[in-house]
Length: 315
Image (cartoon, rainbow, N blue to C red):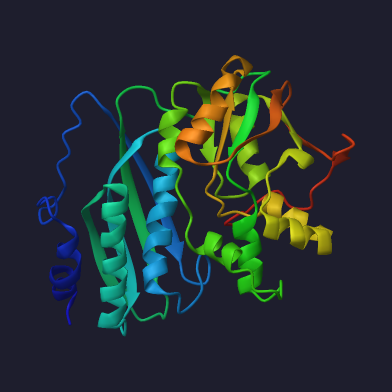
């Protein structure tokens, strides 16, 4: 089957509004702000060889939607770029696009365009450019103020531990942790809920400490983080109890796609209701301080030094 046959047979079925087919998509923004983000996933770097195409489609798309969530915006649609081996099967196409279609319905988004090509190397490369809209305020990394409280959604480190299970470094098969690595949950509704009260926000893709550093660098502030306040799943607690050194993976591993955000303490009384409304745990883990560094403290408030702060694509 040739490129345009694949596009006609599989990609066009994702389009219900005639947004694709021309040289560019037309989006009427009206009074809204348009947000644009892009992620690239490469086989053997961001996902395993022979990765389930159903899961791969969702993982690729959701990692982009998480960026939109971190801006406090509503996802609108995306452009899809695929670089595929010459021998990719029709079953792969069917499973991949069926999974994308499920995500369209789940997140109320649409495919806006894209491109496909093949190559002789036996690797899959996925490039997604996602678009979101906001009626007014958008959350940035640069708004944190000294004295702000630092919050995170969900549990931290499950995805990093799930990766260690896939790599057979952790021997026990914790299915929930593997699922967190496979299928991130973009906190779209939470991002919208904190849009008016958060001073800064970022999603955790590179690792908790490194992503807090991104906020600090953009806002020209420091941060104090308290280890005993960081929320962990029961599975993560069990692993740490047996192998304490994995705390470094929890703090520096990426792929959580939870939100880190800062708020003025005067809004702290709103957090419980926001948590209840969005059905997501929200935990206060520290505060914004003067300076330019993130300082991590143990339960005795002694400073902890990390061996690795987070994922780096160029190391």
